[in-house]
Amino acid sequence: MKIESLVIHGGIDGDEKTGAVNVPVYQTSTYKQPSFGHNTGYEYSRTGNPTREALEKLISDLEEGYAGFAFASGMAAITAVISLFKTGDKVIISNNVYGGTFRVLDKVFNNFNIGYKIVDTTDLEAVRNNVDESVKAIYIETPTNPLMDITDIEGISKIAKEKGIFTIVDNTFMTPYLQKPITLGADIVIHSATKYLGGHSDVVSGLVVVNTEELAKRLHFIQNSTGGVLGPFDSFLLIRGIKTLAVRMDRHNENSKIISEYLKSREEIEKVYYPGFEDHPGYEIQTKQAKGYGGVISFVLSDKIDYKKFLSNLELITFGESLGGVESLICHPASMTHAAIPYDIRQEVGIVDNLIRLSVGIENSQDLLEDLTSALKKSL
Image 1 (cartoon, helix red, strand yellow):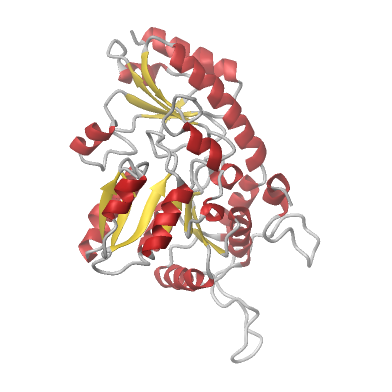
Image 2: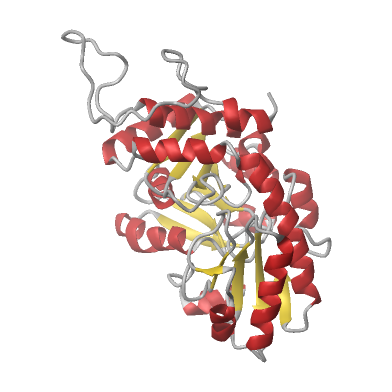
């Protein structure tokens, strides 16, 4: 089944008992057990819920993995994955990883002596040279948030396999519609499903897919023990959102190409970060490992533009956190998504104060162009 059909019919397709075309919302905390020592396959909804299970099977099908897990947020998903490691272990992370990922490693897991190394993961030799006995995983985002660096998933996975460690890929920006890390050798895939998978800015959720039975058993134990599970109604909303993933991502791709070319042509813009440009350093790898370039563009405003005025002068594009919704969303990474990252690191990698991140929605592209043009003119 092709992915355009799989997003609609994958996982558990409808309800066999009633013929309902949608999986029901099993809004229950517990389940009647038919007799002592026997159950229907469900005991308590933290451990398993039919609506959540349908979502978990769906994301596993889409990512071509062994098993999927649904969490109450993307950060809950990341926390569960990092909980696979123990005191003394380290994880290599990309040098402009999402601020929330850095924060949980730096401020929470450091307390338990689970450490990290910041490495430019686009440089495979640098990654290889930083893998010592303490490193147990390589954690990458590709494209990265917000600078759109591209890491070779297959190349990283080969290094990880040589060293006997895990490859973890945050696939939020691409989704399984555009990129499937497990087929490229990754062991674990993470999504902030709040973003493109949900697609409508109405649910906060996280998903994880693993590639082996052993990892599935370990992660299920962590999920059940720590309890950060996604509720049944939110699971239903996420299944509903995924059904339109293919058509939405096509439109996101189409609009982002138009907007990125426009931004590159404007004298008020110093630099545009978008992996769909042929002169982007990661263009060839992105083209090889994904079937599109996504809907996120970052750009640096010139000094003659007041970035605060620019953001306040936008009318159609929404200034706010998050990305991946049907509506275009714009944010200021240095003070919002990446504020947790120390100032010197932000400056070193390029998360400067006049850097703007734009999540291009599925609106009419001409309307978006007009809004950007108006805001730029008013901010001189």
